[in-house]
Image (cartoon, rainbow, N blue to C red; front, side):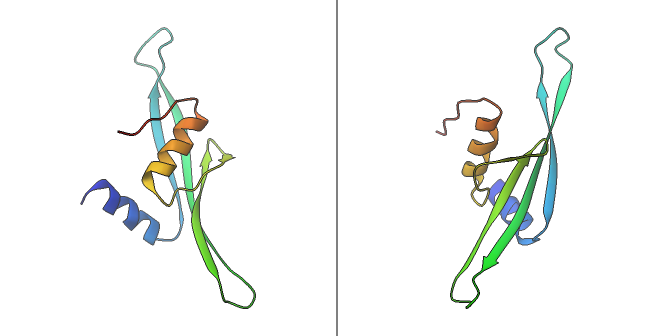
Length: 91
């Protein structure tokens, strides 16, 4: 199973996910790690007359809502890494 299939399977579960990511901290001891908590939450909305339906995945980093939608892996990575101060370029 590739990463896109695994990500889609995770989205299909329709619930919240918390992913712990460790980032190396280059201050003093290089073995120290800083914990980052990423929460992905599926949402959907159907208008009152049921003619439209929209959905997405909201993103929280360390408890803070960030702009962006996590329905596409690249968009999710761009949002999270951008929030953390990285300039993101996909090749």
